Image (cartoon, rainbow, N blue to C red; front, side):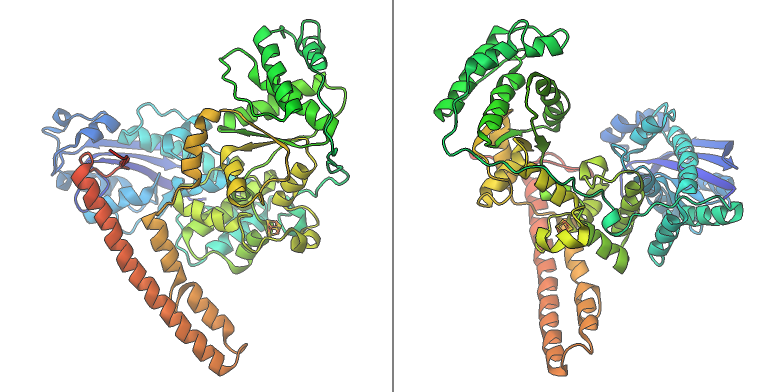
Length: 568
Ligand code: SF4
């Protein structure tokens, strides 16, 4: 392990090292994990202090009056840091400001914002404040340089311990995948690997490869075989379960009969029996979930017909899955099969994941996500995206190429290869056998848009949180254009000498006849030319959008701006 390092943080007037100025420097020197010295200095900026920076940092313009200029402060910080490796949270941001001033250009940079996403795959967010809260590190005043540097130092000390517990095979794979990508987290994994060698720590063998990656599907769940003519529900049976002294009251302490809940259940029973549409507005405290779940469950059990329950929020899905459905099961004499089904994009595709591991990542977003997944899969085998946090659009883009949202996805093809262990395959199978399937509005709408190829057949649909449906429809059928993502995708495409197209041309050499190779090269040149043109037009499009936003929107700053255009 590195014995001496400096955690460093800057506050600045904005995000651009060319235009903006440093207003505060904080640094903490650590030796063998212990803080041995600290440095803190306010700096008088060359440009006015924007109001939003005062809002974020709490630093007021009058506090900067009379403070030294950056030229006078630089020798102090250069002396303080000397040649120690510099740790920061998004360290490149801070170091680029200092490098612009000609300071600390050659120091090794270590980034906790790169390490944390790999070593804390389930953290809810990767901001310094959030990571400090999740790891119990005190952060007195967020966005003040010394406090941020202290929190970074504490976070770093915790993160450095984690790689020491990873299996040797995992450390080796991470270090080998990082080769040639100048990743600022790589020295930590390399140091851990060397420390493990020196200490001869016993290795933990955990396989994260092939069909052992995820547990296999539990076979034997029967499919639903719907009755031709459905049998009507008996409301009296439902009323008794919801009533005073009924099955729910006997099982759930504090359960009381609620007349409005019983009335709502009666309306739902009638809608099922008559095949009618029903719209209900139920206020808080009615107990609406049980009022529709109980009739839906009995309808599905009695008639072997599946009911879909669609919600808008994850909170409600969790409440249904973790509380209401288990509560209700206690009131039913027959077993009820219920499950949550998410969109394909939520499940990791083991086939694509294995392909990335074989070919090795080509950029830092791929590398960081690959390492995060390898670490995550050591402990968690669900393959469900909701159990990890993805950092920024780059990681989200890579995930989309590793998820089950794959045009080549074929359950049949992977059945033997994955031996039924593919997370999407298992979720889909479990939904095909379930009486009640909980989904979100987005997935329901994706099913509607794809001629019902997303969800298993169902006979009835319950929309909870239906007031959000209109918004969900706008979201589901929206068209999105992301400048960074578009440029990233076009750059990945490359040309005859680089990127995916270059790889394709190289891979085809010797495999196809010379004439075919020549034709392929021509096609690749045409595609690359079109991609360059597209980059040019995209640049003009986004620049027009920015001008439009400048003309009609609020004053522009460096942060996200939202402009909603509505008809007059
Ligand atoms: S079934 Fe689809 S998601 Fe699963 S491994 Fe095969 S391609 Fe990937």
